[in-house]
Length: 363
Image 1 (cartoon, rainbow, N blue to C red):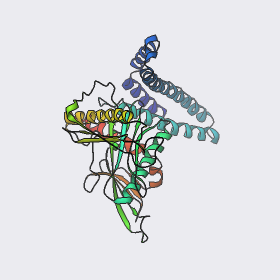
Image 2 (image 1 turned 45 degrees about the vertical axis):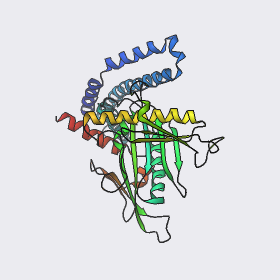
Image 3 (image 1 turned 90 degrees about the vertical axis):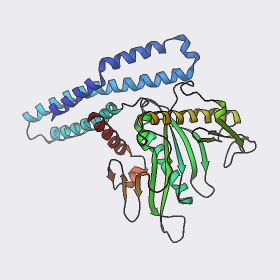
């Protein structure tokens, strides 16, 4: 089996190109040593994050090469001591870990989109289903936050609009780390929940919908140019819990991009200026996703908006009368709904990335 693993590792090393990785790391090190860079802390942080990502891949390749060598030595020792159960157990564990690590690293080779290397802005909007749908939106928010936590990814919640009774009307957060857009872009779409409602005394079965939107983070303010005459900017008083001045002044901002009808509302920042700046940033990210959609003519393949209703869901989460989560694009499914809602969604992400990779290679 070690020869098979070695071939997979060699294929990955060729695809990831260690020489190019080394060059990228060296180039980033030079940029980070520039005294002028530290006048721009935000750019410095981005370059540091990018370098850490490439260093991690390089270290994974080196570690896997060493572990495969260790595996070969264990197989030799086991052949000499055929009845040594300790060697056999250790060999099995090492093989299992290697396969998992190779699978994880192989995922890195499936990112081919222009914006895949970027971080992502994720918005969850409550759709059809009333208070059940609002509660479902909060469950989805927790699912993605737990996924980020499992991967040690920092999350910045940009805006949160609570529902009057339970759950949330909408939430927008960003994960500004390399290749997050590439990983999460296929989460965009309508997510459908079927369960016994905890919000009615008869515990009737309810169907709820929430829309997830995923957009790449803008790399440069000039990447998307906005014309003031294309924008309608409304200000209003924030609702829900807030800090000092949040609920006492007209600080909330709603920006409508008239040509596309995209709407971004931000209310959680302390000032109207902060809310406007953040709303413009999110609007640009959404317009960038729409631009890519228009170029590719593949609406289901990149972020954008969803209507959160019947007929366009991408994934079903069924809690009653049976337990099942099924992706309608790849047909990947699992009965471990609890784990999925606790952030274990990597298998769904990998299935979609693998499908895209196979479709690309067949062209």
